[in-house]
Image 1 (cartoon, rainbow, N blue to C red):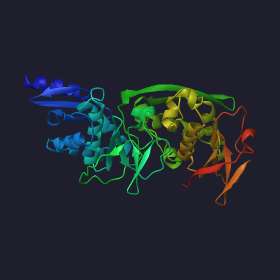
Image 2 (cartoon, rainbow, N blue to C red):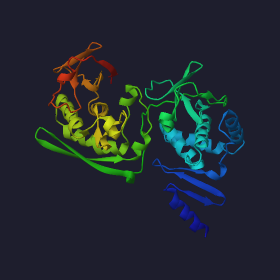
Image 3 (cartoon, helix red, strand yellow):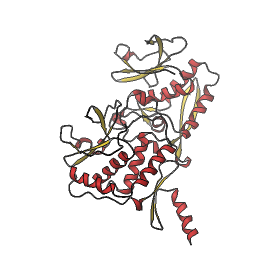
Image 4 (cartoon, one colour):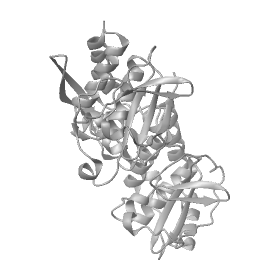
Length: 396
């Protein structure tokens, strides 16, 4: 009988599920290729007494500190280290664990307090503020984040992690009162940089066919894409251009595309190869403004651009940068106009329209459709007399 129970449990491990065995209550977070499994019988819900204010939060903290949460914290941080999760991906794991313990739909404030507690016990300096029947959750971060609220506390910047939950209900006036709780060891900065994407199960990928025409030949691609990527970036903020341009692909998507591009450009000169990548990025995907596509301004990572049906100039610039970096690793600059962003590449000799930057010439490579068949070194007429700034310079 016990062998049968063990077999059933092993079947459940591959799913997002809760299993009970000999007093255990096992929850499985099946987000990454390797699932995170924890025993929820050691993490009972801690209640919030009355209105969520500083006093009730303090009571929550004292109560949860008396419970057996240390094994869960140790398991989370070990999983982070073992899987080399960056801070943003680790926070996605914390969100799902908090949801399993205290569902967001049942009590949003309690769910937020669990995230706050687990992030602090993982070493991050996360804070809370209350006001207007809201619980604001923010974390210490030194980076340039453009589209979410931030607070300055003792000269340190803290960005809001749950702004998206309140949206227009978020108050930008001084209605939030910081909660004065100091948690030992919670001093670390949080970073939005993503240097490595997580691994997902192979069966969670779907195949997307794209094609484009180059020099009278149609090139077909079967790119493997994963909907989990959209979930990772659902609430990802507007990061600085260096961070944005260096978001990589998952391994499976990478292997479905980059070797094919390398094979297709084999034998081409560097100029022709970059031209091929420029036209792939320009014509293999449909264009649409973010306001129409998403209702808000949203920069897509290269993998999101590959999987989405529509994308705009920011997205094309990011994808083109990634492809040129992977195949040729050439110096590049990102050029920002008032309503457009484009790229320029440094070749051995400048080609056509080139911009001099830090003593080097970079030739325009337009990865976004412009209504003109632009070659390397050609800029659309409407941008020729506009002011621009260099927002990112890549040096191999």
